[in-house]
Image 1 (cartoon, rainbow, N blue to C red):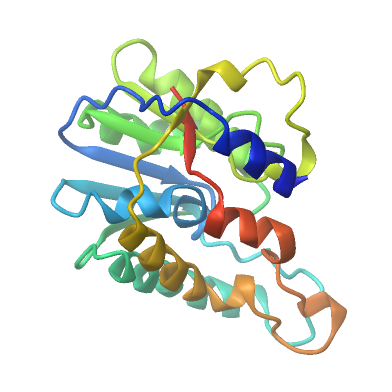
Image 2 (cartoon, rainbow, N blue to C red; image 1 turned 120 degrees about the vertical axis):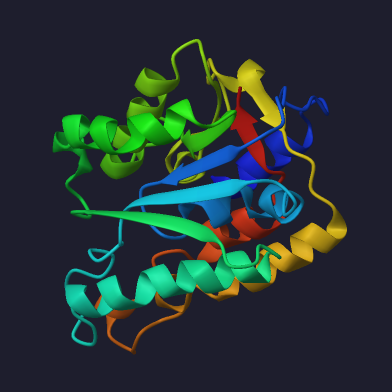
Length: 231
């Protein structure tokens, strides 16, 4: 399915979303969502005031692993994000960790709203997961962004797992997709940045429970398909 989506996205008109300039707030459910979805665009925004918020530390990515524990992942994944953002060219990235339970954001709406409201108020542009992305944590963060931004703050929503479970036929939101500017140099930076998420794109061991979370056609989509947002 991601390969079908890639061809569909490549055929979209080159219509960029309206960018108000100013401060950018990037929300994600897990450390890696934002780089996989819009890392190429972020590589071109290094002169802007960027704030990154991760709702969880991604500790539940390998629940049956014989190699790593949730505490191991909680310790490793935030560092992978910082390394990835630096590879995009963002020096000393401002990353705020909420530390909410991975897999439990669907029941944390009030906590998310309270933690994010002041940050949203100070932002000119907010990027967040698509609220119908198909992963409950992504959906929860996306829904919080929709509630908090309302009509006052520009919101771009980025699909991620959408590319893995939907087909590009008859999706009613396709006309709202806007392509992001991404140079060849930014693409190279994004590929290096994605590789920094070793716990997600590399096998942790030979055990099937340690297989990559992001791999195969979905990884290729993240690396080579046009970056888009709903705006």
